[in-house]
Amino acid sequence: MGPWFGSPLLALVPSVGEHVVRKVAGLSIDLDTVWATGAAVVITCALGLLVRRQLTSGVPGKLQLAWETGIQLVTRQIEGSIGPRGLAIVPLAVALFVFILIANLFEFVGIGSRYEWLGAPTGDINLPLAMAVFVILLVHMASIRERGIGGYVKHYLLQPFPKFLFPLNLFINFVEELSKPLTLALRLFGNLLSGTLMLSVIAFLGAWKLGSAPVGDVLVVPFNAIWKAFDLFIAVVQAFIFSLLTILYFDTAMSTEH
Image (tube, rainbow, N blue to C red; front, side, top):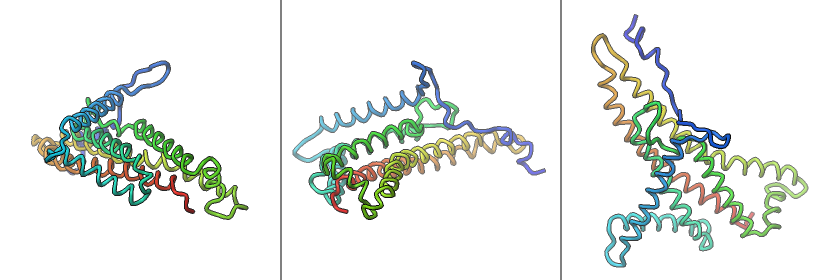
């Protein structure tokens, strides 16, 4: 029999995505997600206030320079796709990026335990789905404001096929609009959940021994370091993708061209 047979690893099953749940008015509330979300909001607001406090018309500090660089990148992206009328989206896109990035970075302090004291709230489907629904509602409001009620309705009835196929147009557009918040939420949630899964699997390596040699305890350290570095990359990419898709959805909604 090989070294894996009879190993404690074979009897262990990692627990992933478990939450501290409390009942409030008949609803199940994930308290750890609420706490982590609140912490991310506080850090985001504190960062904004810190940038405002350090604002100067002279030589900017590192924080102000980083903030202004980000604002310029988002502004150029929006002006190039939507035009000047889309500049109102800049605060939303930047706020989403900063908030999601901070929330994602909570994964970086995770240790793969059953209950994380400050787990990434974006690893709970409730937060990504709530943000996605919020964004899509704003997108539809922008579309109505830009096209008017008549143009908004015509968009869904007369595209992409001729008007006599309006039932098919309505069905296709309905499926497309329904998929937007789902894909926006599931993309973010799936990537963060997979990170939590990997941390749990790495943590369970600690139970692996070859005789009296604690092989697992030794491997956990480098594996954790490597995965944390990759997690940092994923955190930035997913925050960027969510913000970029938000801009693209507004671009489509505010366009009056066929």
